[in-house]
Image (cartoon, rainbow, N blue to C red; front, side, top):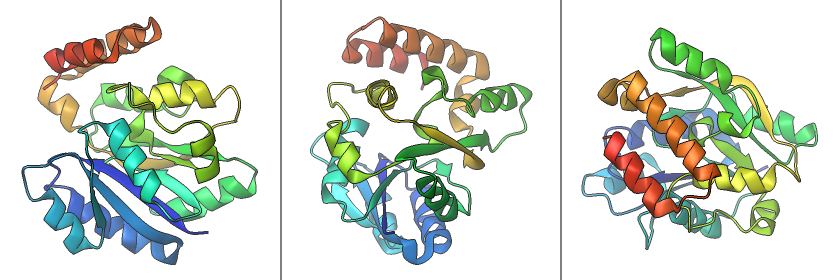
Length: 228
């Protein structure tokens, strides 16, 4: 199996080099390419990603949905694996993904923990092991077979926020999603910067507005007003 790892980025110079090197070191020969899709970074993200061994793609639109779709179009592997810049998959991610595929799954993700011992973040992390829609999100990373990704139409670029929830809302009624309980490690930077309660309130409101059909641009403006 050849895995294409797709990482949407914007101003991630602090992390992207170490992430790419980590994925190369732990993915071995199974990782055929790492596609870093830049949305217009103004720092050294592109240079550091390329130096670490990634192929850098310039997205026409600064939007995670558009960036991930751009990466998927360029990917040549047998499996697409979407990873956020502030998430480290478990070191055994290749073995775990291959095992899930052997069990018959065609898409899946990893449960995760935060790089913080904050009690409330540990509570948050507990719930992401479940498959309810509200327990999903890009921090869990996401793998899927390319043919299925295309069949489902990829990420809907209308959703400039909550794009992963929209995709899984369409995919999960038709195909089983496996959540692998080998933990990814996610940066707690958003919570440290804004405070746990503020982020939690913003997430709850955003998810419910999404379910009520509020326009994504309006939803994104709300979220940006809450979270720096």
